[in-house]
Each structure stands twice: as C-alpha cells, then as structure tokens.
Image (cartoon, rainbow, N blue to C red):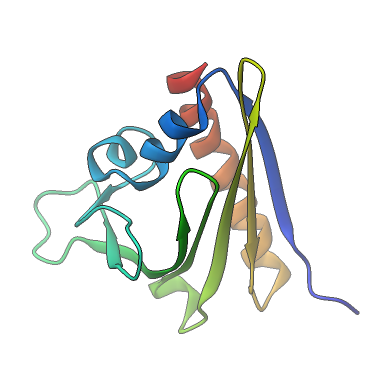
Length: 135
C-alpha cells in the first residue's frame, strides 16, 4: 500500500507575488492561518503560535523551511504535539495564470489515516480563509 498524499489546489485572483507574501509574511499568515514568530524565509526555523495570549508557551506548530523559491515554491516541515514526534512536509507551488494564481498545497508524511483526515478538514478551513482574502 502506498503512502497517502494530501493535495489541495485553489485558484486565486491575485498575482503569485501577492500569494507568496500571504504564505511567508508573518503579519499576513496571522490573518488566514496562524501567527508566527518570524517570516518564513530560506533556512528559517519557525513556530506557529496559538491564539491564546494567556498561555506562557504559545507554540502550537513548528517547522523548518527546506526550500524557498519566491514566488514559485515553498517547502517546509510541519509538526505539532499531537503528531507525537512525526514530522510532515508541506509543499506550496504557485503557478501564474492570466488573471491570478493556481496554488497547490501538498502535505505528506503522516503515519495514520486519522491524521490525514483531521488535517484535511483543517486545511480546507484555512484555505477558504486565504481564498476570501485574495479573491
């Protein structure tokens, strides 16, 4: 049996450069996904932060940027405490189209099907917010 691959593609009425900023700029990431401790730049380690200001440790998810080719491709690792040490990989590919951008997100590396199902639902919600911001 082959490993499952989660692939989501959306079409945005925004240039690849604008979409790229929404994937990598900490201020823009906070508007559709989660606040981060820094911009997602080449070779950066980063943390996504919880929405709860009352917690001392707001680290929710974390990863490392593995590849950064603005505004075409971003690859980073992705994990959180509920993955129990499993480190997954998220790849964002941007394709310029007349009038906008095709954005494809590929998320791989989960161990159990339930992890795919849970993250599939979450990505749908986040990508809907991104679409609302950029279309």
